[in-house]
Image 1 (cartoon, rainbow, N blue to C red):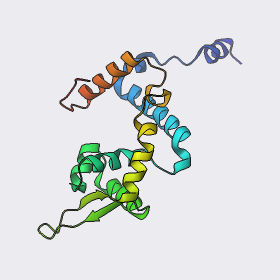
Image 2 (spheres, one colour; image 1 turned 45 degrees about the vertical axis):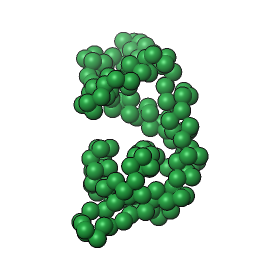
Image 3 (cartoon, rainbow, N blue to C red; image 1 turned 90 degrees about the horizontal axis):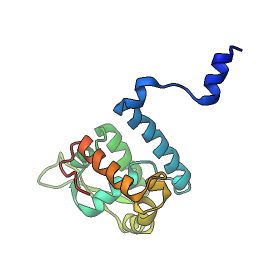
Image 4 (tube, one colour; image 1 turned 180 degrees about the horizontal axis):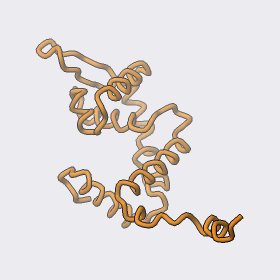
Length: 157
């Protein structure tokens, strides 16, 4: 084996300018977050995004499914699958209003409400899953910068 190659593998892979690429760093951060998500929540059979969807529905009863998809930046087809899965689990209810047969309104069921309240701290709490070892100040700054990045309009913590 080439000694230069062996030395590189021991020290780490040189990523060069990739270390400055926002897209690359966001993707690697997402993979890390999902790894932590499944390690923390794999036993309750919930996929990334599902708790977020239920949380937003809880805060906005009767929210249109399309608006939820737009807000969470989930493709319509994926949102339909997610809603169906949550409905099959008894967590949400879809309602088609009489005055607009094309829209679907979403509500948490009592089981969904209980699930969200029972797991609120695990999903939204202040443990290492949420901070990835960052200080509270760094976590707040990262969240602020990410809100700016996604153009949420409210960059204040």
